[in-house]
Image (cartoon, rainbow, N blue to C red; front, side):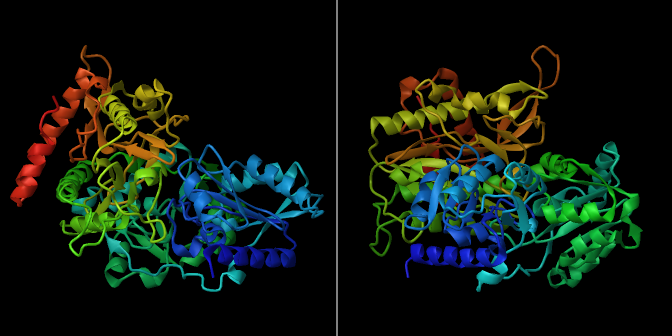
Length: 619
């Protein structure tokens, strides 16, 4: 049976369930109960029903239509993956569709289907535990305009017969010598921030925040070292809601030593609704939660318990974003290891005649496998930090392309290979993109490569006052390409976790308004790109550290960006006359730094010679 036939069968099964439940439309978000960007297989309902495996998107099924919303990173991939299925791909300008867009589409398709369902009392279904409070409340407001209501139910319990189980892998301790700050210190900082909002307690549902707060890690989520759980921080104690099968004797002792009680993962909502946790009456507390990340089932339980609530972002987000000196040192070690692996890879691919040792063609998948194997040789390697994007030629124009056996293509001795990859080392997380020329290039490929590099360097050399946001600086990365009427739809940069999520907030470089100010100690990527559908794609990315920059006149507090990533940027495609003298100076200084840092770590003379040649000054 073809994939399209499988998806069609699943949609038919869902519609049968919907008729039984009296539901006229059902909404599948990309999130799980923890609002994760990457989610355990158990909660990949949107992917299961639609066949689309991108990290962002919303699927909606009515009795006669099916729609899939996603942003520009995934437009081409979504159309390929949903071809010949009931799903219509709807292009939107952000990573999730708005409630207004969803409801307008639902209403229109109900009417087109002559369902008689767009009348007072008709119902739209969703899973309260996998949708955020904010999204559900916005949806309620829009549905009410047409007399529509919400039914909270999970059809996947009935129709997904081989649904994967919730992960049960054991939790691991992240040693203090790598975390740099004890659990007690972190809890004190969190409670201090809560007090500023006159809150006594905090519900934490995001897995990377829980892992950071407790100095624990796990393997429940692909590429991200976290574990499925909730955390309830009370005035005098903290409760971890987790499957006890995951808690080893060592971790149990560690939690007890740090004053952390353990409750079953599945009892949080019942505890909140009951109004008592560990004998403490919740109605006497002011409990903070973030409606943008906390699922609606938790919000509903909080409304039952009678506690006063504060709707505000978790303080952990901002605390975690500023890395301590131990974490920064860990990042530096991780980047050295990653740089060694990248140099070995780049030298290897430069020597290929596009066949491997058994005479088979090199493909997107085989270069991914080679790079991962080289990273795995490095001390402290635990995993990749996201699925590698290895896109050759036209595939590089698909922003978040991931090669599969069906799409994998051989590399040719011409054109560009876009390679966006990263690793999880126990002392740091890496994220790097290099666009690699495999042979002769067109004038358009060289021009776009140069425009992207100019944007990268312009932002990398920025000096800016304390309090500046990433939105205010984003134009620096786009200016050169804008003059050529080119742009890209994704953000220019994001924070990176300390052996945690490769995508971390609250700060970003992005065109749309991001209010979080940039602060010393934050990590952030710079990754502008140009994507020409059917032809080529270019992206150049380094992970940076925001550091203090002395004010020239001694006035105010100033910041700048220091590159953490250590890897040559290929100079062969550069159009020399497009480059300004200070941009060339930056590139040459960066390459001198890369050569000085990595050369002593390379034990193969061929790798050493390749690095020396790759970092020669650009004339």
